[in-house]
Image 1: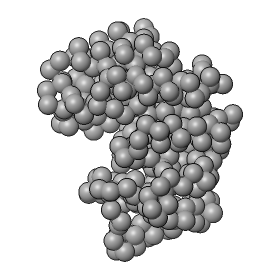
Image 2: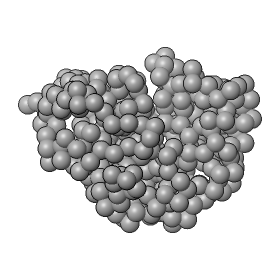
Image 3: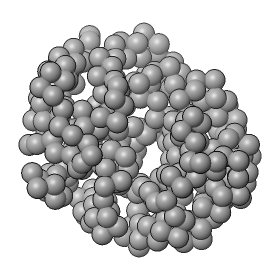
Length: 320
């Protein structure tokens, strides 16, 4: 059982990467070190494992359990752990949720089932049933992962309201609506419901703009590299210190430009390579179909890290 059962889903929450050996097996020692590097940054409120950033799509159930157990053993007494629930079927999703609760996770990040991509937006009862089955398996707080509507996996605004009413353990959304107007509507509406639902932005390619709309937190793969900069930006925005926020954002900008360049699917591949350049990972191995980056792209990452003032050893240099 989690030590942090009543923690609030807010603030800066990095989504951690998965270190792999050359044979693509899990490098548990390196993964644990990386998790510690992220989780123990001052100001981080929780960390997420078994998400997009850790290639959950390419991990078996047993591997997901191994990752969560190792993560809890490494930092579970220091910071809450959020476990991803990534499954196309609701029965399998409930199984993952129950496993996460048994292991000691503090919350769940529930991905939309890919099986809903061909018209699920027209059937709100599908989303409600999916989340109800997960909620029946555990009383852990849930983060609903909101995708862009154009993917076919985003939940319409009215569906989200129905979902929050039907499943009270949903305490936050990870908002990747990728629509600034809709994102602001989510923030203004959901955070002011009679039973508030926090908005955790994952618009890391325009993070400062998103935070200034009033999101109560962020959940981001880029936190695997720059959690300290994200904490500094979040605090500056919350304090209403626009000049400081702009100064910090100037540091984040070159990295967001390279991390989230096309093809978008390489974002976490790029973050792994950045950690190698920073001496925080020994190697950047991905499971296919993801592939090794070109030397030219790795060179662009090196330049962006220099421009951001992110140095080997983990130090971040903010402008005076």
